[in-house]
Length: 43
Image (cartoon, rainbow, N blue to C red; front, side):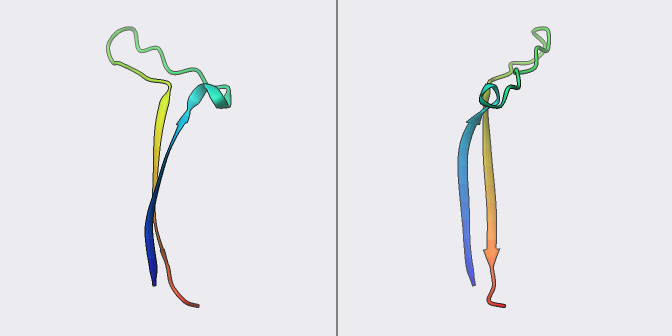
């Protein structure tokens, strides 16, 4: 069995998406952190 975790950072604007504007009720960023945990088993 193989397990692992992969993490990367992407920016919404790289995909044509603007960060949401929440009228000063929350702080938003262009940066999105993506983390994937995976497990591989022999078939």
